Length: 151
Ligand SMILES: [Mg+2]
Image (tube, rainbow, N blue to C red; front, side, top):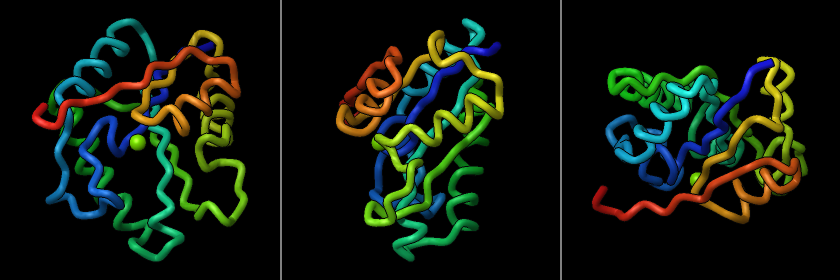
């Protein structure tokens, strides 16, 4: 089985806009690049797990989400921080889905798809009530990172 770093996107890898959709607004944190490179080197798959309720709120389309994402992935890869997969939840909070973090649906789906052992995996995000809580529900190791805005 594989082990994975499950990493949040907005506010963790890139500056939160919020509801980022325009690739022009893409600004990646240096320390996120370092974290991804470090985990890759240690044999972890890198999997982004991200809430994107802006899709079902009608703020942007799936296609716009994909466009911003591919700009992000391309930039990360250029910096040596390749990402293996991206899982996103498009739902609004009121839709009651199982995938919106801190729900565990995205993680469980990725674990099934990519044969990931959650016990040897790791969660990194910027919000304890979202990313941290998701990890706690599955008994996983996690780290909440706070960027300083100039980085
Ligand atoms: Mg975040």
